[in-house]
Image (cartoon, rainbow, N blue to C red; front, top):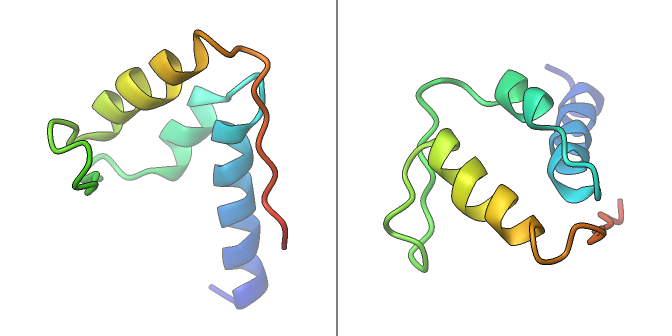
Length: 72
């Protein structure tokens, strides 16, 4: 994969989880089934499904209009 193709995938992944209307289908498409989440501050979260439920969905509920921007 070229650097530009890689960048496009990363931007697509970032966009799917950082817009106000997060796109769980795209996240599932871009993350492999054997994905393992490593974050020392959240040791109870291991899989993509746990990450979606506990971080993306629960984090968004109190702030549904939250939007983040990645500067490239």
